[in-house]
Amino acid sequence: MDSVELLLDVTGEELLRSDWDILKQAGLPSQARHTAASNRAHITLLAAPRIPAQYDVALAALAGVLPLPIHTAGLVLFRTGRGQVLARLGVVSEALCGLHRAVHAALGDVPDVAGNCVPNRWVPHITLARGMNSGQVAQAVDLLPGDRGRLLLRSLRRWDSHEKTTTALGSATA
Image (tube, rainbow, N blue to C red; front, side):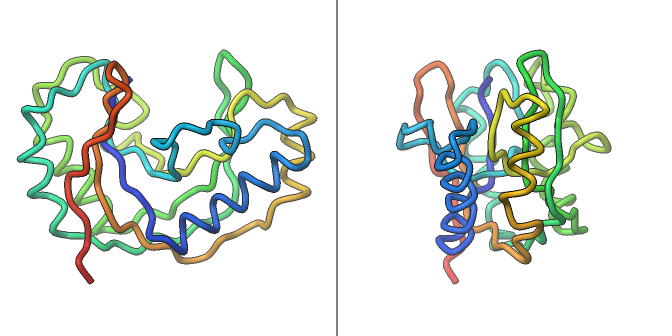
């Protein structure tokens, strides 16, 4: 799946990577095990099988609202067919919802948008680990801090899963 993603500032990235490292050091599934340079702590705004580069100009225009603060409200669990996903839950603000809706409006004719990221169904989160079983989830919850507080979303990018590339669409200058 291709995606449009919000990236954290340096401090937020370091905090989330420390979560990843805690899990990895405990022998648990962790995003730290994905060593590609494109693997960053992020919040997905939209995902679809294909998001063509023709939308980049429209998406870049939306990055002017950055930076946006987001508060993490603890841990959340998503059940999938391949185990459970453990993530940090982001508290939705009016500004973040506005950006989310604007991204979906700009990409309105992209087919097959993932149902879990459409407006009114979207749960902003930052993935910590995928493919966990119940015992691993319990262990992770015991190890991780419950809240990472206020984080700053600083930049917007498009992930092309077919080419395995990212395209920077804009970031905050302040």
